[in-house]
Length: 439
Image 1 (spheres, rainbow, N blue to C red):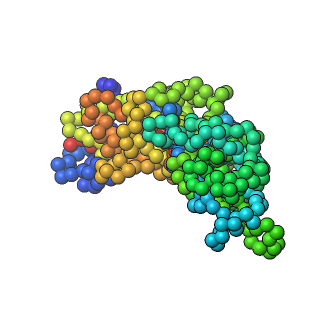
Image 2 (cartoon, rainbow, N blue to C red):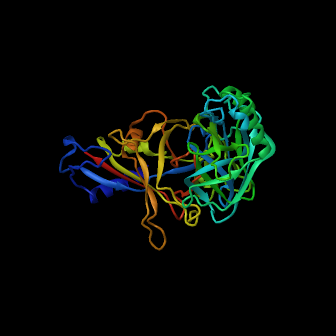
Image 3 (cartoon, helix red, strand yellow):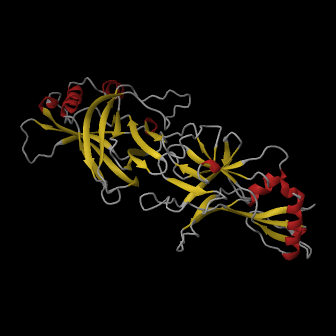
């Protein structure tokens, strides 16, 4: 510490200046303005990085059906199945008023129509296959908060009601159509025709819901709109003219809280296979000097500043006026199949990884890590910059425990995006630039 202060004092003599600017994180007021003020840049502060794993993430009421699986070369085997409850605007066949008219209707077919929401992750040049299964229990949460989580699951029949193999075109096509089992469709049609199903309760008693399950040979995960996807039943009049348009009954996910994605990660054989859950962390020193983030599975990166309180010893009167944390994605960990997100979400956490809120600047505005996409030959300029001056100033003045920063990706509960970051020992190392003023 004595050596550090001597070096700092030497640097102070080299970089002495006055300032009257607002750094954006800490307002330099008139009390600080004097010719004797000294502002220095310090970029040698220790930053500790580790990986954590949240117990669970709420995946219900996210508006996205997420289906698929792929073998990630870094994180392991990622899989998402989607569960949902359906309901209808009507539980009656078309009628112009005659009580006997429905007798003349016959079942034609039943299909599931899934509308792309343009989200995808992985290799979309490969065929994806998934099956539709009927739930054996109602979509009812077993938690006090009525939410479903990424580790939630419901019992379902082993019999497939429909299967599709296709090459995803999430940015080019509108939707996909999966023909469903005609025996199931006929049974549902007869229940409605005979008025055994007349409302939501009788409907869900017979048809509790569906789950979409991907086969293990897939290589991507695709997003579909929960709001705009549906099961559609087609029926027509007996001996109808071949040019007559069939009637339809649609069953949709009206209650978005009754749709959720079960997202899992098999970390066997990866650097993360010993990742503890919840309140512990895995040091980046044990994972090739890397920190990891993955949406959907609860993997997040923790960043700490163990020596920040020592800044109080630099001068009798001093403050951190600005600071930038620059995080570099590890070379070759991202590609067209595994693209970098445009931003990072930043939260404040404690030593048990409990989040207290978003990171904000001195004006109270939420702070994000913004990606610099300008790359040079060695990708040295690619990275996320987070302004953390206000946070470090508060941490410096604390007298008790310190806080950490928890880094996640946007859409943490409805996507499987991931990123690998380098620590201070890595070639793509994390950087911290602190601007300190003594006055």
